[in-house]
Image (cartoon, rainbow, N blue to C red; front, side, top):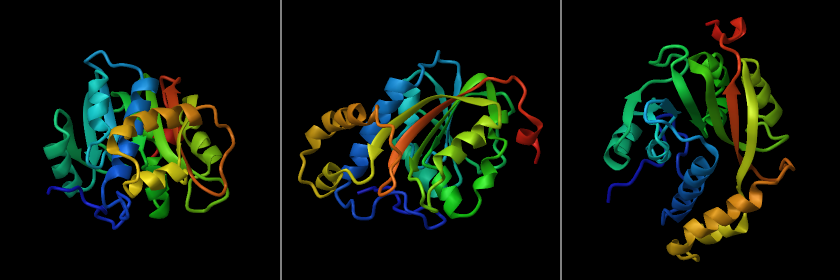
Length: 241
């Protein structure tokens, strides 16, 4: 059976190695795809959306269904090959930050999905500096990442927001998606919950988390941040190389 790689070319986990049935991954995919449908604007068929760090394309396809012309970008050739086979209808290209194959002001919707924390763990988080320059005026940046206050392996939420606000982006929405240690997720992972229930559970957790304001310290919280580019010209600090 053709399965996605468990780790990327740098040895970082892409999937939970204990999720042998694939049900946890399926659940998280359903939940995050539902969040995109609820909280992202629909495209007009012409707008360009980039899924940066697309992995095997599980969110790229969902973005395409929202009416966007989607480009999935990832540095890992194996993941892109899997994405082309299993998540078609998207243009995939191999590239990495800080150099991207796009003109400045050309991207209408840019999604960074679980990208910041791996960059932090590799000690290269600064490669995202200047990313606002790629967004079109009034374009949106969507960051989905795991947040946990007071833990060095996670990007502090305040730092995350400041980083993009410094590039002329305004935070429009903060939407908690799921809790990392919700006990139901463990039941899903080990097959105690039927697969046919997963979509309904994903909708339930989205509703459950959406008003959560407390920042967790003993577990991580997966959060979606939606920024809009409000300045037509990026600050000088954002475009220096």
